[in-house]
Length: 460
Image (cartoon, rainbow, N blue to C red; front, side, top):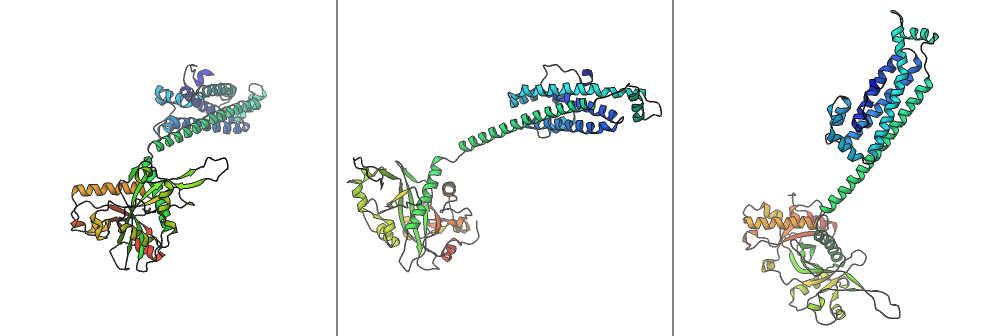
């Protein structure tokens, strides 16, 4: 009965074989429909064959979904078994490439399934005699009983069940291969996504600034203290833009800002810089075992300071041990001094980086007013007149700030333009583009102080 299902050359690919098997199921279902009209015993066989037909077609559609770029194409093909896409060479090549070594195995399974269909169809076609021999007013079932008694028609239900069971096992094999191919596809997709994520990840200098700025806030916040009663609502500000990098250290331009009255719009500024460095483990090569010592090292220390590293460290204060950090920084940053380092900072339990506190020698006269305005104020100021160049420079600073410091203590996730501070209150009189600062949460303040600091009108 190979003529019924169509003789397919062994050289044909998987899709032509699959569509022939799908058509073979359709022929089997029609034949079983005739057979079950003769005896109720074959109704279970009809259900089994239709179930295996649906499983096979579903598996074909799922395989097509793996290789097809059009999500509607696989369903269209399984609904129309005469579609020319079943014989499309390009689609067949995609299936072969996708299935790789499983391609030939899947073809062998489909060929074996077709053989089982042919064998089952040959046995079921015996029931066609009943339709030919039945009388004009005789039902199929009555004609079958009459012919069965004369031994003209007989069947082996066990043989039917064995052949359907083989078809069921072939479907299980196809399902397993298709499932594994899907798993391989997900693994490859995950690897490709990972490679894309790695290739499109932020530059290393952005991640470096992100980590260092977190440590800078943590160490400064843990060490900060103020015993001046007139000072309220302290907060730290970090200058955005290009941070100075020399050797392996990063220099952050900082400021501690505070008000002297709760209603004051003017903030006093304490300008300084934090220069990052990593604690270095130093071992003494002696016969007697010594514990490791953690010391603060500066790669460029030898070029900037005379004397040994120990002499330099002994000459500067540990900011964490000072009772009134605010007053110390105010005195140190405002008094003329030739010292390179004012203090150092280190939080051993939470931070990887340590910091040298240095004087900000480059602070411009722009900040002599000790006033800070917000970016929101500038945007709402109808009389502000920034040139196109100044607007562009400010936009670049803002972009870099978000890129480097987003989701750090310096720039909260729900930030607004009032979180960005400018280096002077009167933007209309500035002769140069102001520096942009990021305002942190309050230092040493109550929850009320923190809320007051972050309350800056509607977000923009």
